[in-house]
Length: 260
Length: 325
Ligand SMILES: Cc1cc2nc3c(=O)[nH]c(=O)nc-3n(C[C@H](O)[C@H](O)[C@H](O)COP(=O)(O)OP(=O)(O)OC[C@H]3O[C@@H](n4cnc5c(N)ncnc54)[C@H](O)[C@@H]3O)c2cc1C
Ligand SMILES: Nc1ncnc2c1ncn2[C@@H]1O[C@H](COP(=O)(O)O)[C@@H](O)[C@H]1O
Figure 1 (tube, each protein chain N blue to C red):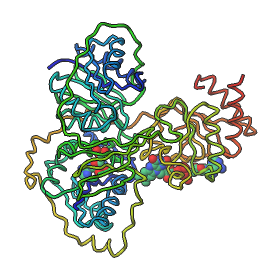
Figure 2: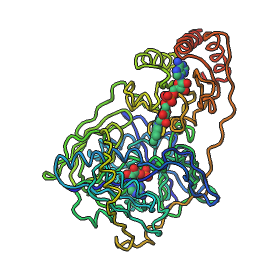
Figure 3: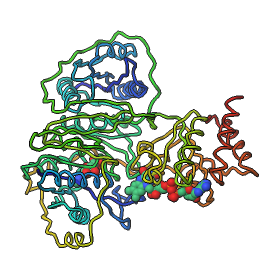
Figure 4: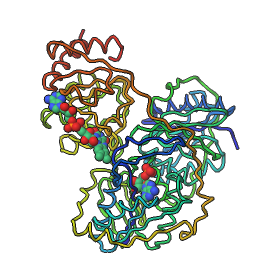
């Protein structure tokens, strides 16, 4: 079977700066693989270990994102592709999903596509369902357990987690699955594999390689403004001789402020 | 193109959800500002009944598709039905809630009908005749104002964006759509309610615990009890979810739930940037921590320095006394 995993590199923590031209500046913050994508990589590896086949990891982004791909290779992915084209900057999650769909089409023989349920920087949760529609595949989002993934029978059965319910859902393959925490325990790569991944040859694909008309990728959303959140009003400390006194004072304050 | 502002209505056992009632108000407000009409969209195995309820809120139009395939949400059936109606009637805006289902739905639908999409927004308004939407990103460290250049704008909206609409009586019409021929490649085999399920996003008061609780037993003993005294729900930091004290569904933060209750009580939580991402928009924040320099105090409305083992039982007692009196 051929599993494709879309991964994205994001700042480890989000104390980012906003530049005067409303871009995000994450310089100086350690880059990591977006958390939910690690579960996606791990699940692809587990399923390919079971069924045989290969795992391809793909990122749409700039040259700096190569580290995330190398880490995925070190975890055990068979090949990595970086779609890097200046014409593909700032195309948003829907635009990235269009590019992602073109990648899957070019790869040709794909049984299953994994991605994170949502990135931890843009947090749109759009890429997975959108790439599925562009590929005309079913999408199973928020997967926390894979019961069956059978490329021969072209069938996948998963559990997914909604707010107050869990659902068991089946679909035909090929399909797109988006992953949440609890799905598995992502592995740590060995030192040997990390070294090997450093030397791996990672092809760079462009919009032209994918036969994409970049005019059709123009985002339909523009950023009119980007600002830090308004500061919270200054708070106050509640003192008291004993725990009981502090607790009573707090309750009085909350009652007076009509919070409770 | 019709200047119609649609909202996707959701109902449970025939009752409109609170989120839907907010969306009705919001759609009415936006339609007025755009010089258009609000309308509801209902996709359900039981759409006729829900459509009647929607008309009683004074909506001039309700588009409805009824089909057994719409009993449980699947992307194929819901997006197929919505896309067909949208192509036919060409609304300029579609509002939905921001539940997990709705975020799956809006992403797939926007791809299908080539719409501009604002996902998980905290506000939407009309400015100079155009729709603008507000959405946080980067763990609530960036507030984005989005503009759109598409014929259709789809926005999934969090709670507390508008007052809940009240029934107003009405004589609007129901427009029945056909359930289209779409590939249905997925099937819901089973739906189960989670045990002790709580939708933290719907709770007005949340008490959360962190590593400062010391152990799973201590958390179990102190945090749910205080939450119960407040008649609220309880959550947790990632540190203790990862430690296995509490299931993931209670995690608050960047990689857990985003909440904005009226009151959030953080107990033994340091206030890491990823935790703040999930709760910094709460109305009132109370922080309880033994370290006076803990970062959580920077966002707290009220801070209590001390040991959770003493303060939480005392607070439970004080709250119970107050609610008894
Ligand atoms: C990519 C990524 C995503 C993340 N996502 C999340 C997320 O969604 N949610 C989240 O919460 N975290 C998240 N984190 C983790 C986050 O960085 C912190 O590690 C975590 O929030 C710390 O949890 P804590 O406050 O319970 O523990 P700690 O940081 O260990 O803090 C414990 C606090 O308890 C206090 N304390 C100790 N004993 C007592 C006592 N007896 N009485 C009173 N106070 C006491 C201490 O002073 C301390 O402030 C994420 C991290 C990363 C890298
Ligand atoms: N530029 C990208 N390159 C590769 N994968 C992506 C990209 N953007 C989003 N994804 C995938 O889609 C998921 C959801 O991202 P988002 O829609 O931004 O919340 C991520 O966790 C990734 O798996």
